[in-house]
Each structure stands twice: as C-alpha cells, then as structure tokens.
Length: 142
Image 1 (cartoon, rainbow, N blue to C red):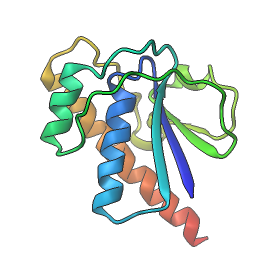
Image 2: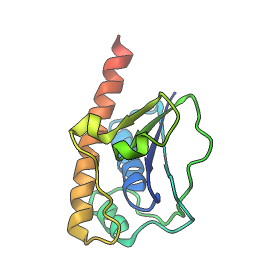
Image 3: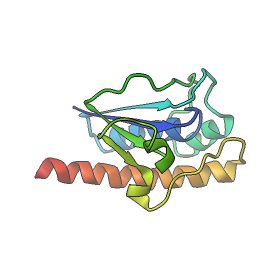
C-alpha cells in the first residue's frame, strides 16, 4: 500500500482538490493500492471552499463538505506532496516532494479567487497527479 498526503496551507482548496481529484483518477484507472489524504499546515476546521466544490463537480470528483484537517505528526510511511517549496522547508521529513518537482512550478493558493482561478488550479493538480502516478508505476517496475 502506498500512502500519499497532499499538504497546503488551510486544507480548504489545493490539498483537498488534489486529494479528491487523485481519488477519482485512481478509481477510474482501477488502482487500488494507493491511499490518499490531505492536510493543512494551518487548518482550523473550515469547510472546503465553495469554488473548490464547484470546480470538483466540473471534474466529476467528490464535492462533499469536509472540515479542514491540520497536519499533525508525520508518518514515516507516507509520501507528502506539498504545493510550494516554502511548505517543504517547514516539514522535517525526507519523504516529501513539491508540485514544482512534478510540473515545474508551485501551485498558488486560489483562496478567495474566482471559479476560473480554481479551475486552472485543478488543471495543474491533475497534471501533477498523472505525473506522480506515472512515477510510482515506474518505481514499482524497478
């Protein structure tokens, strides 16, 4: 079993969208041995952002409400995927990668932005998720 945890600031936009889009991708591709979660460095129990829910619906991923969850103790068996280099610098673990290492740039926080910004964020996340799964498949084949 491979465990992936997406991390952003508040766990109301980027990381929850990454989690839900990855779960949909895994289900659609019948990949059963990857467990996905998300957390926020400064999460405080807010619900998922409304524009994140709207965007997830457009991609036919779950848009159900969920309170944000703060990142707690790090699990040595989990791969953490952060949305920016500055987040990586705050986490004391070797099993961490940035979105930038997958798609060439950080993913800016869309919080408070319009639907168009959230949609573009989701497209970047989708691209990163596909690259990540391809890397995991290659790693398994070694």
